[in-house]
Amino acid sequence: MDCILVHDLGTTGDKAALFSLKGELIASHTEPYPTRQLPGGGFEQNPADWLSAVAYATREVLHTARVRPGDVAGISLSGHMMGVIALDGAHRPVRPAILHSDIRAAAQARRLRRGDLPARIHQIAGNPLDVHYPWLKIAWLRDSELESYRAARLFVQCKDYVTSWLTGSEPVTDYSDASLYGCWDFHRMDWSHELCEAAGIEQDRLPRVARAGEKAGELRPEAAKELGLPAGVPVFIGLGDGASAAVGAGAWEPGSCYTYVGSTAWVARTAREPVIDPEGRLFTLAIVPERFTSIGTVQSAGAAWDWAVTRLCEAHFETAESLAAAVPPGSNGLLFLPYLAGERSPIWNDNARGVWFGLSSSHGVGDLLRSVLEGAALALGGILCDICRCSEGAPNEIRLIGGGARVRLWRQILADCFARPCAFPDEVGEATSRGAYAAAAVGLGAIAGFQESARLVPPAHTVRPVAAHSALYQAMRPLFEDLYSRLKTAYDDLARLRVRLRALEVTDAAV
Image (tube, rainbow, N blue to C red; front, side, top):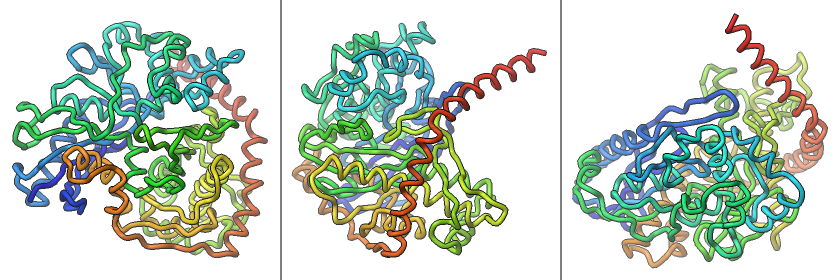
């Protein structure tokens, strides 16, 4: 039976999945890889770890599914976005990969926040100026590691590098990844020379942009041997994970809305044209030239839950959910701001940090745990309000995908905070992989186009909001959002304190 092999390069590991040509999930396997955290807000991974994970996960999923290597008809990849992989002329990394969560380009962002330039950037790129975008990371590399910058020929995303390694072809990117470099012109659907010049980076070091589903090349013999596949299997250009999740969630038609709940979570709504938020709270992402999404993110959603369960329940997740479920909505007056690693949209503040507000001696572990789930859900509910403000009409239903949607209690809290039914498939963790499947299926001609992908999404279950709970969360949201406003200057003071503390650590170490 012919099948499609996909890889979803996530922030914690690579998921290999096999789909039938008709879109039926056959098997999947996830292979983890490490992330290195560095002083000053650095987050990096070794691209060699991606290649090892892709090779091992491929062999494992073929073995698990008992699929013959010769039955793999095509390959496509999805991957985490807004990173920087600097490649030399032979398509080899010149240094470790910089991840989307890396905020070391803060100084480069500050230099561009002068005069009318931020407004001009927003007008061209469709997105506010933010430290997470790759063009600023490239500028940081130029300013901080000039030798690496000079050695780099192209700056690409993780899926683009691995696709190039599989095929031996020139690395290219797709519209979704290109649209979140920060220097993409949504009006021309091309790189902006003006913005590249403003940041002082060379436009010719940015990759060629192609449509997802186009053929990138064929599996070269050396890579085929590593994966345990025959050489010559066609490899197709995939999507960045945000766009891939939209396709895999079945949110293709304009107006459809979904929430991805992973380490990072987001709410997104599909449109035919770019929707640029005049208030700069949301950002815009291209899927393909005729489909776009408006998105707002919670940087630490599943990551905050994992952190809380690890610290408070010794990583016993079932116990943690039971403790949280025993607490009434509102966590007995305890609010949690989920800014453990700063925040992107809608507040765009690298200095923001997590807060428990209202903590008293009467609160127990269950209150702390439930407040983490509610904090992320309240933040996502605020994003949905912003999306409705920028779009015509409100969605009747929200689709839930991502590993966090496996948490039954969280699904109910999200439905209550959204005050809308939330539909979710059995395979909540496979949406991004399913989007990568669609890219390969389009390339192979197994489906006529991405518009057909929605009908292939498995039937969904629905969780409905409890009216009393929705009313409570609606009443909580103003205080939740006002807390950030009141703490904004304090976050800046705290950031300066952290700098002093790091300097003291260096001095003490020297002594």
